[in-house]
Length: 474
Image 1 (spheres, rainbow, N blue to C red):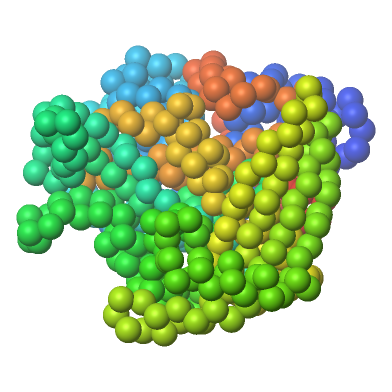
Image 2: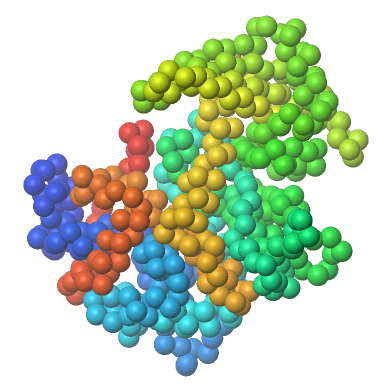
C-alpha cells in the first residue's frame, strides 16, 4: 500500500485513536495542522504551488528568484499567522523548516523577504488579484459548498458595506478622502466590501471596491459611487448568480433599486425612520388596514427567550428623485429579549425589499436575509481590524502593492474560515484551539518548527477526504 493511501485511510477511519492520535502515521500536532491547511486549499481549489497561476508576472524571467505563487502565498501566510507587518516575515518565516517547505512547494531557496513582496507587487495589476478572489468564491459555489446556506433554498446573501482602513491627521497620499469636523481635517482611506454571509458565521470575501479620489472629479469619491462601480463588476463576474443584496440604509434610494433590478438581484435595504419618507408613511398607513400581515415568532437563543413580532405591507409604490417608479415591499421586525435578570429590551428593524413578503417567508427573510448584514461588520471588518489580519496597518506606500496586500488579506481570511470551520479540523483537534489568534499562533509555530518529510506535502494532494461545514452539506 502506498504512503498516500495509508494516510488517506488513517484519516477516513472512524477509529477515535487514529483520528486523535495521528494524521500521517505518528505525525505530531504541528504536522497535522500544516497537513490540514495544505489539504484544505488543495481540496477546494488547487495545488498551493499553482494557486496564483492566473496572475501575470511582468518581471524579467532571467532575474526572478521567487515565483508569483511563492510571493503571494507568503503574504497570505503573513496574514494567517497574525504577523501584521512585512518586516516580521524576515524575523519569523525565513530559514529553518519554513525554508524547506518553500523549497519543496515553490522550488524557492527560502521564504521571500517582505520587501521583495512589496517591490514585486508594485509591478503587478491589483485587478488580477481581485479576479482571483472571485475565482475562489466561484470554486466554492460550483462545488456546492455554500448551497445549504442559500436563502429560501435559492439566493446567496451578499452583505455590502464600507469601512475605513486608514486615518491620519496629515495627508497620506493624493487619493485620500477628507472629512472636516470642528475645524479639524481627517484624511482617510476607505473600502466598500461585498461578502457572502451565512447564518452560522461565514463572511466570505467576494469583492472590494476602493473608495478613493482620482483627481478627475470635482467631488470626492463616496460609498454610493463605489457601489455603482462594484455592482457592475460583480455582475460581470457572476451574471447568473441568484443574489440577495443586504445593504445599509445609506443605500436606500431609487438608483440603487434600479441597479439591483437591472442585475436581476433581490435586495433588502435597511429602512431608517428618516429614510424614504413616503415609503415609511405608506407603510404605517397601509399596515393598519392589513391586520392579516402579522406574525409572532418565539425562539430560544441559548438560555435567552426571544420574541419577534413581524408586520409587512406588499406593493408600495415609490417614485424616486429621477421620477422613476418602483414597487417594493416593507417588512418590520420588533424583537424583544430578556436578559439574565429578566429585564426586557426591544429593538425594531425595518427593511425595504423587492421580494414578495408573506406568512411563509417573513421570518427567514428577516433573520436569514436582512439581519445578516451585521455579519459583514462583525465577522468581516471587526475580525480583520482587531483580530490577526491588521486591516488598518499600512503594508505598503505604493498604491498597487497596498491594494494587492488588501486582496491577499481577503484570501487569507477566506482560507482561515475554511480551515477553522471545516470538519477535518474538528476531527483532528476535537478540543478546539480557542480563538482565531490561537490558531494563528499555532500555525506560525507549525511553519517554523514542523518537519514535513520530503514528498509528504505532495502526497496530501492525492488524498480523497470530505470536508463538511454543517450537517446538511453533502
